Amino acid sequence: MKYLIILIFILSSTFTFAQVDSTLFKRQQTDSIEQQLNMDAVYNRPFLSFGKLPVSVGGYAEVNWQHIGTDGVSEGHQFQMRRMTLFVASTISKKIKFLSEIEFEEGGKEIAIEFASLDVEFHPLLNLRGGVILNPIGAFNQNHDGPKWEFTDRPISATQLLPATWSNAGFGLFGKTYKNDWMLGYEVYFSGGFDDTIIDNEESRTFLPASKENDERFEESASGTPLTTAKIAIRNKKIGEIGLSYMGGIYNTFEDDGIVLDEKRRLNVFAIDYNTTLSKTNTSIIGEWVWINVDVPETFSQQYGNKQYGGFLDIVQPILKQNMFGWENAILNLACRLEYVDWNVGKFNETGGNIGDELWSVMPAISFRPAPRTVFRLNYRIQRQTDILNNDPAKTGGFSFGISSYF
Figure 1: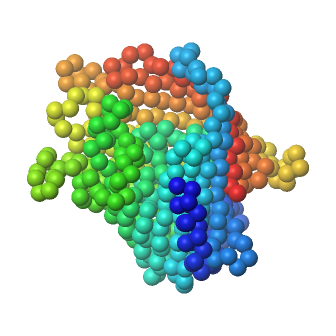
Figure 2 (figure 1 turned 90 degrees about the vertical axis):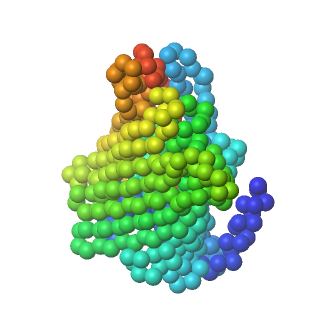
Figure 3 (figure 1 turned 60 degrees about the horizontal axis):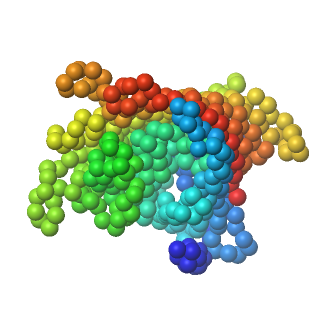
């Protein structure tokens, strides 16, 4: 695998270099002329160029410590190298760009190409993208870089309800325009997608992230039909950005070599996301909510839900900005994340009682940014999770500390 990575860098170096946008952290761009949308996150990163080398590179790393237990049982002190991600970008020629994102997780145990696209611009409102694309459902899936967040863990709704960093091979169109204080952007993609594992997995529930384990989705679609993902986002400099997105398609292998195996079964996902920064207090508010509908066969037990929903809300309040410990304009923040997930929305057929399998979490945090590209973060998790029968919830709590930085 290491030789594959080296080969990617060698091949990338054959492209012709042009400057890539290295703007960081929208909420700190108070003097920026051109506002950014979440859809710009793939290019909204720091890159380094070296002389006449025809590519620019960048990346980020996350390292954590945690001590968390459930119902009094803990694995003790845990040290984690969560991930290291590398970016390679190039402008091949006028209006043709390439960008890749390669992620190493768990000390290199897992290596994945999360994004590798060729973008061709015909007009600001009409651009073609092809390759491994990040499906734009919600906002976090595209805007997931660790140094942009004040929390060591990714949102539960983005990792355990939606499959975080969900990417597939595909093609699509995107574009944006702006006038005065307003900006409008859209994306539409057709790609590979989900498979039968969303209702046949080790979690014993309807679980969309299970499809991430299927590496073959980059070569063939389980259903032989495209997954459609579409998003529209509107931003106002004073109000913030709101996005509406949809992802859906046939997920099951309903036919094999012309033999019909099952009826076509769909999944449909709807999401809304919002982010803003209050001008008077510089308070950052980021939220996302998602609804999922899955056509589950009637022969399956009720533990496999056909309706799910959940989301998160982050509130970040800077309390101190000054020169600290030798760093200029360092920032100290107080933050809190509120989360809720229901994997099985509905009632039991036999009793009419509510089906459980839900979770809520509150995570207060303190973060310190010596520079915009680096964050130190201390979090405490308070979490309650009920099983499908609504028995007394499992109580989870504990501290986590982490450092995340672009490089």
